[in-house]
Amino acid sequence: MVSRSAYLNRLVFQERNNNLQNSISTILLHSLPGGAETFELILKFCYGWKIDLTPTNIAPIYSAAKFLEMNNEMEQGNLISKTETFLTYLLLLSSSWKDIFTIFKSCEETVSSWAKELHILRSGIENLIIRLPPEQESSLPCNFLLHLLKFGNSVRADSELLAGVEERVADKLEVCRVSDLLVQKSTNRSTTLYDVGIVAKVLETYVSCAKRNPAATLLVVGRLIDEYLTVVSRDSRLPVKSFLSVAEALPDSARICHDNLYRAIDFYLKVTENKLTPSSYLAREPADDRRKATAVEQFLHSTIYHSVL
Image (tube, rainbow, N blue to C red):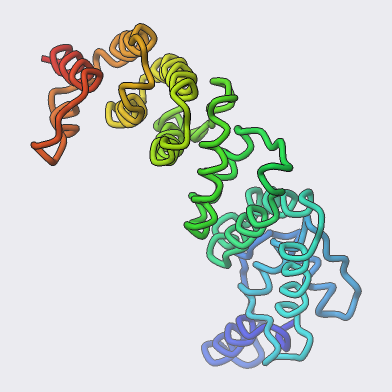
């Protein structure tokens, strides 16, 4: 195994220099990606046994091979080149979305940090986006696209590809339900329950294309967003800035009345009454003094401000 791994080769050489030649050296690999199961497969490979590469094990084995520096300089046809070839095939050429999702799952469970460092996740998500069926031929749910967008943002996927996904979601807003927009942010109790920022970003895209949207569609989307705010406003961890980023995203023409919006504000103030501070309001003041606040913004700002003074 030492003859195939530059990493182990260095460690053994250092041990021999530091210890007596006849002493037995012990090398610990606590941080090996994939753990003991992956190490066993690599050991078999080094001893000439055939190992089956699958969508489930390819990411851990590839990550471990990179960790151990099993490159072709040590031996031709070494493990990095073999796993890289198979991984590239799965990500770029395989016709099965299931393979890509299986790779994602294996990364999440065993080699998350290595998968990010080696851009396995980014390559996977970018190629998944590229392979999305044309919009006119697809019935992909809005919630699926939002999760795709969330994942793409987390691995810093190509911005143009992500912008394309945002446009697809924006085009579907008029047929969305509130449940379609609910994307869980994290299981961490210290952060917000839903990813509100991703919805705010989609709304920015929607508004920027508003010229081609009829007034009726604006009203439909306005009702949808106010109902969405009513749901997410019950999260006591939702920052004021996040709430306002969604509430202020639509123009006045998207609302005939503001009853649903006021209801969302009321819920929000009740669940955050002990957490809001004057600074949380002041931090949201617009940088451009010449910008005229809409009636909705004025209500939001004044209501939140007075509730904390």
